[in-house]
Image 1 (tube, rainbow, N blue to C red):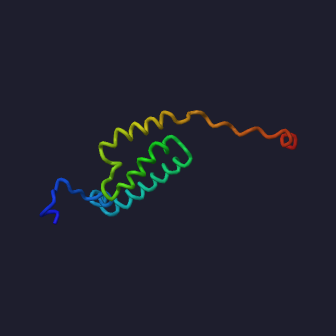
Image 2: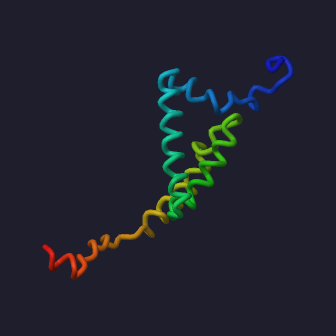
Image 3: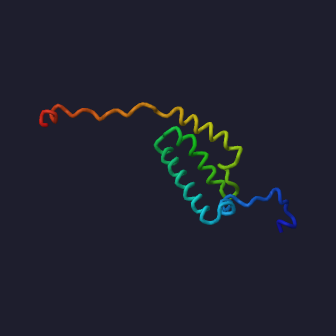
Length: 112
C-alpha cells in the first residue's frame, strides 16, 4: 500500500528498529542497553538535582517518548543543543575539593 499510494521520501523506518537496520541484532541490543544505562544515569542526576541531570534528562525523556517515530536525540539538528548543554553542565560543575572529614570529638581524642 505504501509503495502504491505513499510517498517514499516521507516514509520512515521507525526509530525503534533503526539501530537493528544499521547495526544488526546484536548491535541493536547493545545500543538499547547503552541508551538505557545513559538514560538511567541522567535520571539519577535529575533526581539528585545536578545541572547535567536537570538540563539533559528532559531531552532524553522526550527522545524516549519519540522512539516509535524517530531517534530524536541522534538527529543532526539536536547536536548543537546537546553540545551546548553538555558544555554548560561541564563548565559549571563544582571544581572544589571535597572537605576532609571532621576531626574526632575531644572525648574520642582523649580515649585514643
